[in-house]
Every structure is written in C-alpha cells, then in structure tokens.
Image (tube, rainbow, N blue to C red; front, side, top):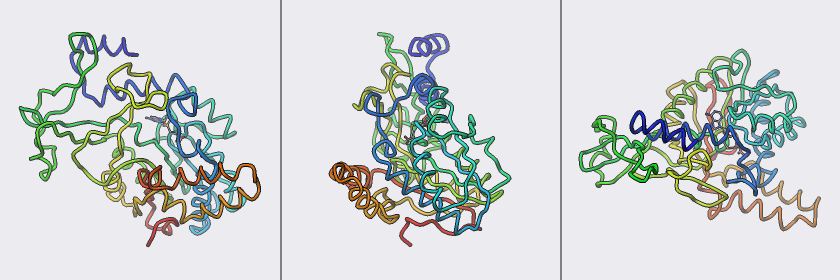
Length: 345
Ligand code: SAH
C-alpha cells in the first residue's frame, strides 16, 4: 500500500490528508483482523461480554417501549461481530427477534462476523440498509476510523493539510495551496500559528444518511467512540500498531489510523436530519445506568474463579482513568420513538 500511495503522490503531487487516511485504512482493514492481543488494538466488546450485554438491554428496552413487532438491527463496522453476538444473546430473552444487518467493507472481517452472527446480511454502506421497517443502529469505534480533514494555521494563513513525499521518499504533512480561512469557525480563526482543527465530512454524511433512514420508518441509533464536543483546536490524528502509538505517516495500510470524533458535528447532522439526540455522556455513566455493576456481580457469583477478572473488566469499561470518560455515548431517535435509557434526564 505504501508503495502504491508513494507512486500516486510522486505522479500527481501531494494529496489531502483525508485521501491518505481513506486509502490507508481501506487497505488496512481489507487485509487483516486487527483486533485483540495479537492485533493492533482492542475494543470494549473484546474486553468484556458485559459491554454487548448492556447495549443489548438498551436496544431491547427501546424496541419494547417503541412497541415494534418486526424491526431491523444494524451495526456499522462490527469488527469481529462480538458486540452483535453479545447483544443478540441478551435481546433473545427480552425483545422480538430482529433481522441483523452488518455494514462492513473488509472481506476478512466479514468472514469473522458471519461466523459470529449467522444469518447476518452484509452491506458495503448505509445506502442499502432496509428503510421499510423500524431500525436500531449501533456503532462502536466506527466513526473514529473515517477519514478526517485537517486545517492548519501556517505562515500563509489557514490551509488544508496535505501529504507529500519528502526528499527521503517518506510521507510527510504539508500545507495545501488554497486559502481556507472561510471554512474555519470565526471563533478559532485567530488561533496560534501551528494550530490544527479537524473535521470529518464522511462522519457528517453518514449521520445525515442515518437520520434519513430513521425518519422514514422509525428507529434509533447509538454511537460510542472517543471524542469531544464541537470544533476545537487540536490534532488527534493517530496510529496504533501492536497496541502502541506509532507514526501515522509511516507504513500506511499496516497500522490503524484514527481521530477523535466530534460529537457536536454528529449531533448537528442528526438533529439537522430531524432526529432527537441524547448525550453524549461518558461510557462509564451510561453502562452503570444500564446496570453494569449488577451484571458484574451476578457474573462473578456464577463464576467465582473469574471474580477478580470480571471486576477488572468492569473497571476498565467504566472508570474515569480507563475508558469511562474518554469514550462517549450518543443516542439519536425518531421523534416518534421514546427516549433512551442510560442518559440522565
Ligand atoms: N465495532 C468493532 C470494531 C471497530 S474497528 C468493535 O468495537 O470491536 C472499525 C470497524 O469499522 C472495522 O470493522 C472496519 O473494517 C470497519 N470500517 C472502517 N471503515 C469503514 C467504512 N468506511 N465502511 C464500513 N466499515 C468500515
């Protein structure tokens, strides 16, 4: 992948950072299962079954209170399918059965997901999700994998960040040619030299598409990710390789590239599309409100030798020094649907 990207840049000149990320991540996910101890990073559902169980209760409760009979359950970027499998196990006890739709581009991960969630229907993008019945969508660590655009204030003013090849043939960020002052929020325009702001047009476009889908036949979405609220100064573009932070400009396609999610932008796109939004709230508060502590206790009682491990998993998912506040949870729903559990009023 690196060689192909380098050839592309050598031929056509620097490319926007967003294109660099899109190419790199497409190749990255298409070629491997990146999750778990052997891979590059781990996620909440891979840490503990309790994460998926709480999301399953969230979805079952909502479907019951919305009074739906038949509905679709969809996940964006399902990884190994662990989250969906854990949700379905819980939902089978509480809610009518749903048809499962998985939005996934990676052929390698599709195979893993098909084994974890037999009968799931696959889609390349959200365009082809069913719009003729109510739908509940979930997305854990999906939006952070979408390509961001960066704007940087350099000596010549605000410019989009591009990626070029330096004299050693290494990828390196550089300033684009076009003045970008006009797209920088007025409050941030005067930021110090070197300041960076990030936007994610792909995330906003997908949120707008989801709003359209949900308003058609009713439904809701839950998004969980690390992020912040609204436009701000800061560079969150990062690479993970073998569970360590790595240089995102080295070996594109072989390490996981992500950026923090702007929940303010997501919220604006979802509300602009006619949905009602709750949150974001911290993952710890959300999971505890849904009963994570009680679940951890009952699991520990049922498996005494695992009691300490289970307590550790609960801590990791909810504590402020771990994933509890870094990860945020946002819910959006059709105006005809009841509000979600898990969010303080
Ligand atoms: N939700 C999973 C995995 C997160 S990793 C978990 O919590 O464990 C990101 C996931 O999004 C992977 O499944 C990856 O293949 C998928 N993905 C990344 N970009 C995508 C895109 N543009 N369209 C669909 N899926 C994408």
